[in-house]
Length: 356
Ligand SMILES: C[C@@](CO)(OP(=O)(O)O)[C@H](O)COP(=O)(O)OP(=O)(O)OC[C@H]1O[C@@H](n2ccc(N)nc2=O)[C@H](O)[C@@H]1O
Ligand SMILES: Nc1ncnc2c1ncn2[C@@H]1O[C@H](COP(=O)(O)OP(=O)(O)O)[C@@H](O)[C@H]1O
Image (cartoon, rainbow, N blue to C red):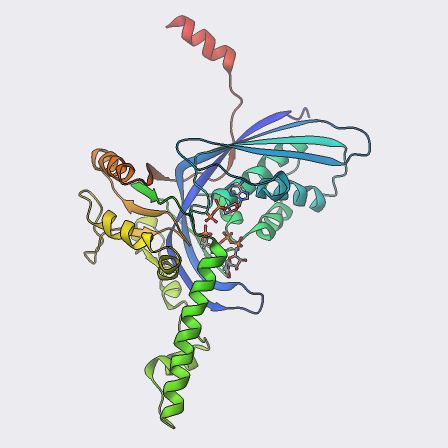
């Protein structure tokens, strides 16, 4: 079989419709129940395979061009998660050829935004490398490599709407994707995922210290929160109770927006509270069954999304957000994950143009 020399891979963003973080685990990660939905907002990862000098092994060169107002991505080739992905895949499949892989990423997804851009690029690089190297993309080894790169990476191999448990990386069940529009708004600053989790732990530790002080001052007395903690076996009270309910939801449209990491991210970046309140007050933003505006921080942030179904309202909110100095885009929920795109048929396009 003739392998392609160049592939272009569609690399979508995501939002978390539901994110419930629980206790910190011995491996340093947290229990998490997450429902992610892929978006039409996407990067494009182009990968080209060429020869390299004998005994040079796998040489990788990765660059990113940021478009649509996305801030430049200042990441060295070896630190780019797309490079890490192809190197890990080559190791997993024992590939030792002398070759050069050039990866060019067109970035439209802002980074450190909770939109999973880096994770999606990693999954796209895995798909692209499978196509270039003639490897089976549905192989369990590809999934394994994806999981080793980050909690969000396996989701992007699949796309659509998926519930994940474990540390937010283990497939729980698929939901029927929804066809709804949304507006995504991001301030200049990003939020590092690790920093958001640290802020979450600080608040949980402070809460646990308060509980300990309360029980020490009244022998035999326990607060309700402390009893809940004891019965659930968690220290911080976040025992993923909502996750248990979310596990029964089968349609993305029925998921109640929820994120218990949002407060921690708002402490890291207070401007996020302003964006949340501003979006909630915009005309055209959806209202949930409980009467709340459908506005939520995506993952650890710093992007906040609002469900907005009519295009005129969405575009008006995008313009108004830009006037406030924020990056903003309207897009829609999507059923696609990372996908190798068909070859560009430039000669056909030329023929069509002539016909017109
Ligand atoms: C919060 C979420 C929600 O989807 O995503 P983002 O907002 O970053 O997109 C995820 O939990 C992030 O997933 P991902 O971005 O892949 O994180 P990773 O690279 O695996 O981990 C980055 C850091 O976050 C912390 N981390 C991540 C996941 C988890 N369940 N517990 C954690 O404590 C760890 O400190 C880890 O070192
Ligand atoms: N290809 C990439 N795209 C985006 N970020 C990357 C990439 N490779 C490495 N990174 C690093 O990963 C960090 C997190 O990026 P990203 O995955 O977009 O954010 P989030 O996890 O908040 O969705 C960035 O700030 C950047 O330093």
